[in-house]
Length: 263
Image 1 (cartoon, rainbow, N blue to C red):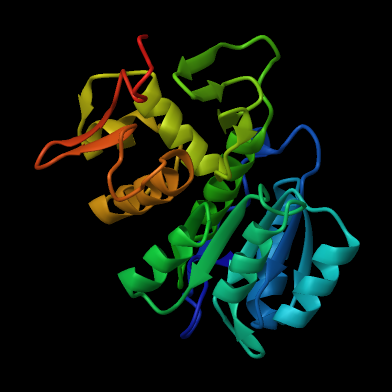
Image 2: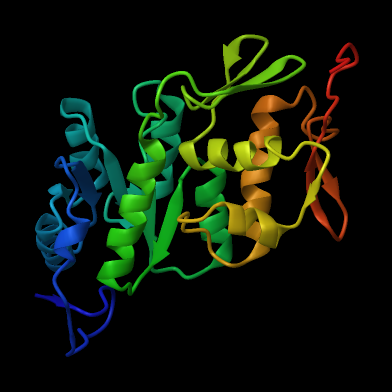
């Protein structure tokens, strides 16, 4: 059994219940956990294993890179503070590689500083969890990452806005026919905006639309993801024409985005 909270400091005496049998994945998903705390890794591995996951652990960036190069994983749980470097460096590498660009990635951090979390999101992490953490929350967040990464049935709608198209079935946005480099989380956020063109959505409305997505309840997380979206779909991110800010209200996805867009 697992301590209720995992992370730095003494273990809490109470025990977390075993994962709900109804929550066991139909097929085993392969997770890689990179964390230098061997005790925590072993307990997390056991807990997630009970939920039907196949967990591989690595205690350093070097070991994690070796695993990622040799094997395929469905998701990565990455500690930021490792003995041979910063987990943010690996996050940057993974998002720069076509092979691992879409790998669902959850950061673990004991730093507790919003800036560290914001930087991680800017580099392409899909979610983060602070230490110490409740193991059930980790399980829920991992499942949410995997759900969002699952391909949708073929034949779903394609949203088109001038030179930008958003393929819901393929879970891909394209600008001038070229794929946009968005994480799964960023794609979902773009879809929420694009499905209400011309309508101002507050941050609360956006978060409510992203049901099941483990966004923290503070505005900056959404702002960071919007910034990343603009960086790949806007011709000039500093003067956006697609995702617009309405000061004091939220964001609006423009109906007409290009000079020659009559739709």
